[in-house]
Image (tube, rainbow, N blue to C red; front, side):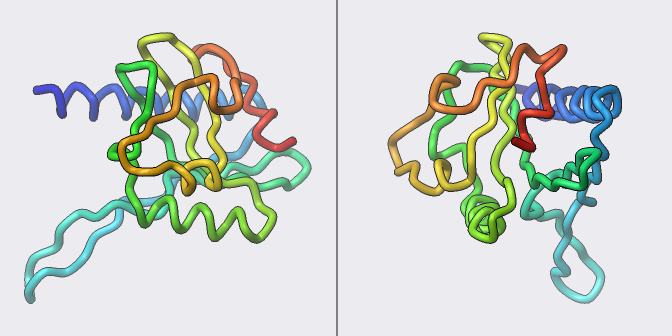
Length: 147
């Protein structure tokens, strides 16, 4: 039940993000779901390296994975290693990349650079104050992702 609630909340957050981007003049490109072949006739869903590529009106690009949490913190165990690695590789090439997190408990949207996520160690967590505050969920300033 809790997993289903989280999945629904995450989907709602992504839908809201797409509407917010459109209203702020930011192009969103959503990555399609990934899959892997298991046997001759069976495919299983796998996590892609990230959820979105965002492009602002100047052509500046940002790669994002979106997360939504019921709590006011995000722990290392809630990250997917290959996603953090890929976003970190992108960031290494001087392109903004990281996690866009909606903390539902405190109603804020925060951006965490991939390098910060890569440095997070097992057993540790990050709070909203550890990232770049973008605003409340209903109107975050997404243009700050491109500064």
